[in-house]
Amino acid sequence: MKTVLFALMAFSGATFLNAQDLDTLFLFYELNADRLNSSEQQKLDNFVLQNKGQIKAVHINTYCDTSASTSYNKGLSNRRLINLSPAFDSIEISSFNTYGEVSNVKGQYNAEFARRAEVIYSIIPNNSQNAMNTKVKSRIKGNAFEEFMADTTLTTTTIRLSILFYANVDTYYSEFESELKELHEFMRDNENVRAHIRGHVCCGDDYNLSSNRAYKIYKYLKSRGIDPSRLSFKGYSNKIPEVSPEVTEYDKLRNRRVDIIFTKEI
Image (cartoon, rainbow, N blue to C red; front, top):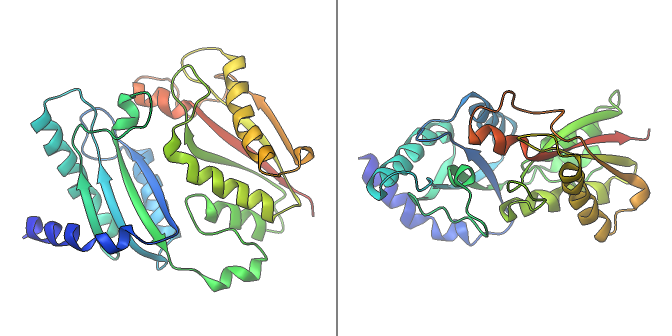
């Protein structure tokens, strides 16, 4: 019955994929795992909770790396989809794809990034957000931005971006471009906010690389009209890891990141 249901959903998803204003939640798996680890499960739970009643529909893609056989990876990809589905019991899963070992990664292949699920979703506009005098949409980081602006007692907060970088370079995965656009919209629409961008690395001390990653985000915002006087950046090497110790390649991937300290002038 579940197989037939999934087949029907895949057929019905074409209309959804042609919709506008889609965003993507990325979830990452450890090697050969068909269930999310605790931190990624928390990310998924928070996403569903924060957007409860606002998500129109979702399309799910699941992927694997190339470390096993084609048939094993196809089965693993299917199990990842099946285990993800209950999180969206109250939401229409419009369509899905299980790609097995076809990683669909643009540019340099990276096994840790290939082990992922993409939850592509559309949000129902919430007109009540206008009361907060902000144009930020409820997307991947939208709720965190909105909560910061709405809390008049809070002048500073740190928000970790989902943007991850290839190993040993300052190039981020192009799949995260939508989050950069969201960040730009937030800075554009809230001129009383300043941003200190922090770059991080994995695997050893490298201040230059961490600084280059932070500068990449700074340059993105500056080139799109954000006043550089509102922006600063600094590399923190591997001194503020998200995961420690780095036991797996997945741990290293999560530490190749940027976060931002936002300060608003009241």
